[in-house]
Amino acid sequence: MLGDQIKKLRCARLLSQVDLGRKVGVSKQCISNWENNNIMPSVDMLINLASFFGCSTDYILEMEEGPRYYLEVDSLNESQVQAILHVCEEFRKINDKEQSS
Image (cartoon, rainbow, N blue to C red; front, side, top):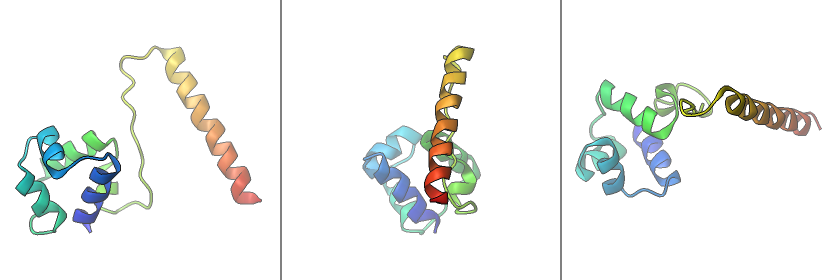
């Protein structure tokens, strides 16, 4: 459920409900209500949460299997971005080899 996803993402970042509320501009009570599935965040807040956690709204809504993370690379130059992409590709190759073994 949506509340479980929000709690899982929050806990993975070692944030309290108060901390997350401060980061996204809502109260602790609001975070608690979301996590307990008492109320749902607005579409705008869902987008803010996805941006904060660096994942897609589909992941928060459990519409995709695994998280897809997005990295902010605006402050990096092209060679730094390419280096990150290269590292990601190397990890994919390692995972593919492990899964085929």
